[in-house]
Length: 397
Image (cartoon, rainbow, N blue to C red; front, side, top):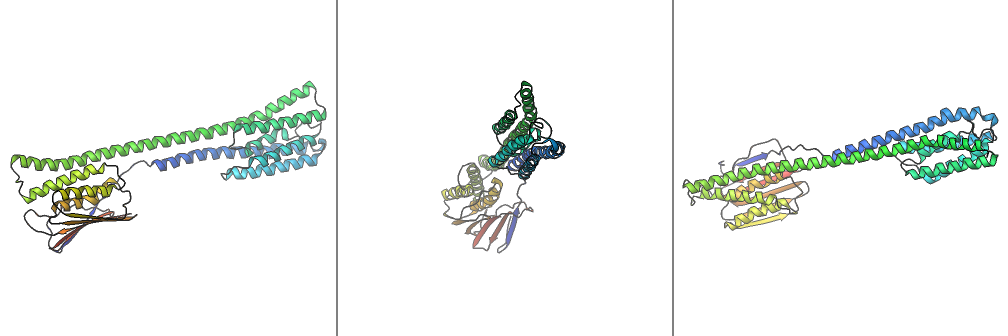
């Protein structure tokens, strides 16, 4: 590309579009699945407890009212359990766990009061709603806690019921057998629901973790494969240029004293050096790649000054290439001296190369770069007959 004195050429380099699965986003989606699964179980537990208390416990309380020893106490206990269960259910449905100790203590106190106030005639009757309804509130209050908490509360419930039997004198074998059947029948289903919900939530979280880990491994593998393929293509491109120059030199078709041939050799060597520097594990890859190109130019006899201001942010390899390649080409064409300046910030990187603008045999402008629609990387070349100024700029989109 030949440029007149004073002309300015601006080239915008397209940024490659990389489509990859986002492991972080996928992980968030999997966590959402686990959260939705747990929320469904919470809704079911709260609904069972409240519907049971209202649809079964209340009619039983009203039906056995005349035969209760202290119906007012039983009714007050029913209201207290409804308040505790309603507040605990409200917290569960809003993603919060209710406090275990105070609510469990209130429910056990209500349990003891209801059994004491039911009386001998309603001890095993429907009017004693604590037999069937209280365990569901245990499920709501203890949600998300270990199963041992449920076992402890149910054991306390059984001890209270046994104390009521002994207090009412219902110690006959038939009464004790009925007691055992009531304890088993009213506890087994809430325990099953509580355990099942915990298992479902645990399995959902495990599936989410497994899926997120699988997606992360797949994304890393795809990224590695793309990087490997891109690097092979890049190496083939750079290697073909060097191979062509060497073949021409070997066949005698190129004169090693020709400045144009020398420039081609320097440019090929610079690109190879920068390509090798890409794979180095360093804190500032862009500066490392620029230093590699500057070192090669200096070894070829070009006095060069490298000035770095600020720390470049992490940039993809393709962006670094589009920032550094025009400067490497300009360095290969520079004579006399050169000054390379890197000014970096969190959202912008500007690289400038200033060198004498010397026209002579073999002196050409850096090859044109295909024009694209991406505004992230901009390449600007200016020359006025005395100074040649090359700049690349990256801006955070």
